[in-house]
Image 1 (cartoon, rainbow, N blue to C red):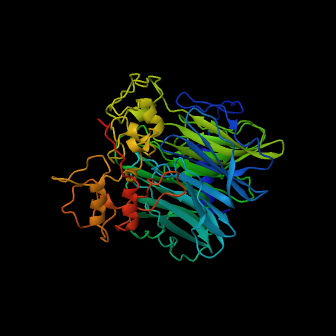
Image 2 (image 1 turned 60 degrees about the horizontal axis):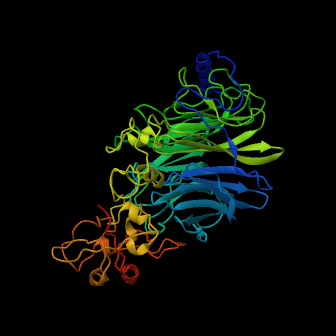
Image 3 (image 1 turned 120 degrees about the vertical axis):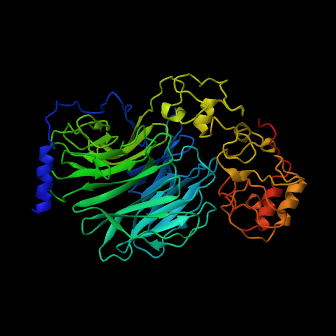
Length: 568
């Protein structure tokens, strides 16, 4: 036995405290509890394994999983307060990962024939065709991330993908305008075999990746994404040795502050051993202490106070050390904690049965305090996907969690403001409906495109409806008149304004609402990317891409006669 491992075991033994026997199945604490687990895939006739999930800005929960018998990847969705949709195959492949960008577009990556492939689904649209992300063959274990933890989703929607290939960790970014940047080697030609990558991003533009090496060391790298081809930092060591299977989560370290904290989690796994050193940890502290844990996963969220750690789930075998145990039956169970395990914060059991094998958990959270967990559980000899959720605290029982109301000046978590006539910003969308849609109840125009939130969710496109209130780029109003201003209507002058800027180039990240200096040079207000395919509406457009071309003229012509004049 390595001396460092023996020292670790000695220190672990000092932390052991005998606790009372816990009841099998879901458990609860005074500060957090999970609802009864439900099966999502019981209606399909084959195994469902390796689930992943993500939460959209409208609080819908998206599930992706692998059906290995037919080599298919299937998707299901659950709306707030609703039931799960019937899982539907969307592509072939394995090792799927999923994320929802701030504008509500769902992105999935999976591996097929050694190639990482990507497909997407815009709000109200259908799934796109697959596109290759990696080059060559031999790609494994992809992960995808975006800045979904921001309090109010903005107009950006870039995604970051990482995967292992030929013993290296590669990464690639897809810009908000839908263009893929070149793939790069993040692991920096290290002389070891690297695998099991994970990626996360925050609302400031920082991207974090972590992976495990054949030397049993977890490393990480980061970059600050500003819309260009920014470089990754050199890899640094997070934990050594005996560390495997890392994950990354990013979340603000206060409920209202702008600062963010990135967490890296990993599991210390001794292959083929029942030694009580098998635990999951994070950069914030020990996640498990029983010596029987693996496959740990993290999720970031807005946290109630500085110093709280990430939400974490892991798979735990029975028979471990009694301190903080949650596996009380005869088989593996899924455990949860919202920070380092200690005497005051014991893990919870999430899985349904203490005697049915439960494996490969995944976790997601949003900035309102809700936490969602999925895993695979064996039922009657078949693997099925199970789901459990933990509601965010809601002191006034108005349907809007306290962590959602606290940062918003127009809401009071101690006052019921969830009625059908409660509309703090006067945009004809009730506060509770704004919560469900992911829009800002304190701002009548969340995406700042000139159309009120209530107008954009209406049925008539001529009056601003059939739009995404989280996508700034679906209303092509231009600066016209004297003095130059936007008038919330698409008329002939708006078409002329775009034509006047035809052929110009500029910074697509510049402010599209800043008054231009002239009528002939590049301005982001006249710039759009292509249509977010496959979409039902021609005005569902990507953000500016840096050049005014014929498609931009077509975009404004396609909205001729559309008016948003009902916004307060």
